Image (cartoon, rainbow, N blue to C red; front, side):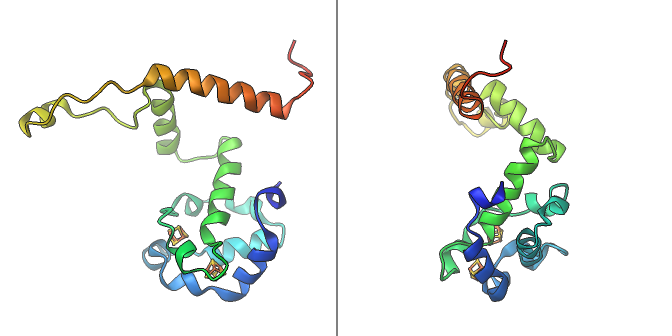
Length: 156
Ligand code: SF4
Ligand code: SF4
């Protein structure tokens, strides 16, 4: 599955390089956060052990590693690929699940703090577009189901 989303040839170079470790904010500030170890395990076929690790959710997606990378690839791709697999398996931090459920329901990641906005003289926030989002989400879900099960097997 990972071979389809990640370029293992580029990851091989990554495992020998490690240059972006020194500019990655998460590497600098979070003990134990080390995409080099994650990449090595991906290459060794042991990515499963990271699916329940909090570290794959600690990538800030700041793109520093992409910017510095001579391959324009980056640690980030490995972390994103593992988060995608973990999320599909339902293994994600509670906050992520809560945020996603709220986003699907309201198309917002949080409720606007109306009293604070009023105090600051800010206008009422615009409608969230939740209904449009729900329609779009239903279309995307149907398209994905069709892609995963083109002949409609087992959909009776
Ligand atoms: S995108 Fe993630 S892995 Fe890359 S530098 Fe930022 S925090 Fe580090
Ligand atoms: S992402 Fe690029 S710069 Fe960072 S370790 Fe891999 S090859 Fe080196």
